[in-house]
Image 1 (cartoon, helix red, strand yellow):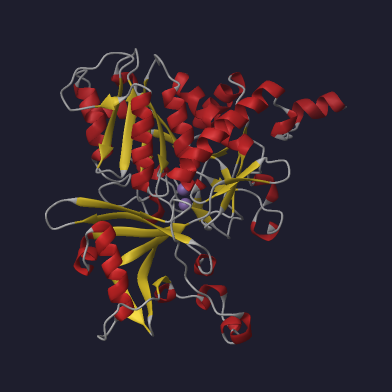
Image 2: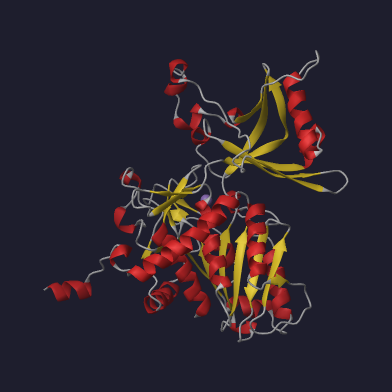
Length: 459
Ligand code: MN
Ligand code: MN
């Protein structure tokens, strides 16, 4: 009877029952590198910069249209400092298709408004406009850092980073003390903290004169000393407040990683590490780090932008191949995180279909919300292909859905890739507390996502 049961039923197993000591060590080594990336890269610009530095160490060089390419060439193109595409040229021509892995490097955060600076009752603040889907109450009373750029009238760009260095000051959005919060506590969690209420406390000492807005003047004067900027320069700035928590191991067994921005830098790193490890792939392998996924993949640096098509067209042109032939034969892993089953909130999930920590890379045949709306829904054949590949390459993986049927769902870059006539499927790392200032992933799943992407690249 047991044999019949084993051969007919599908019973997923915990990943730790399926990896040996050697692989456990690989998981640790892999995650150590990832933690450094996540700790350093707090914005899409910083992630792209970090990726380029590492890519150059691994033999990648910038690619310009018209350059000839040969198998094994390692190239990249940076899209306006916010998105990145890398490729390792395969031995087969591009009309056989390419293998693409696409992740995003933007994460939910608090962007400064264009006229952000003000003083109220002798305290100085920055006004913000949040970016991406956040639960606003999670962003008050935690330490925040300020990252970004200020573009000056003369065309120069000034980099700003305050708070990452342990010696730096940090910022905070204050919350009401419980003693005075009787009315606030009666509000819903969506209304308790408002968007216009997310203002960063940035100073309290007055400038030594007797005019008005003396604290604001003191703050502006220090910013002017440090960065050479005036208040008007905020008009052309992209400054953002992100959580100031350091990335760290979680749990007595250190089996998990806590940090800001796992979504989706955990998959971005998996792709990068995988493409760095390639030598001479059969098909050309492409790694995408996209921007703007959290607000719908819009804009010139998002996945709906023609920047990707332009890059691929340049590669195809170097081999006299039509772009549309390449795309129709290509395969794309839309590498993005998914919601892990959370035993503290079982009511939102249908347990059998939800991804779980330590069960490996999570494949989402479809994402979407309420009736699969807005998903590209990968074909059975594509899932079948991955099952075969991952079994052969010993990649631990699981099938995943985002919450109960009428509860939720989500979007990724998958549909924008599929719309280009590319066979696309979502796959990535399960996350707890997704979109919170401090998200959690399991180390085993991070490593298996890397292993899965590498297997696809090498196939
Ligand atoms: Mn994501
Ligand atoms: Mn997200």
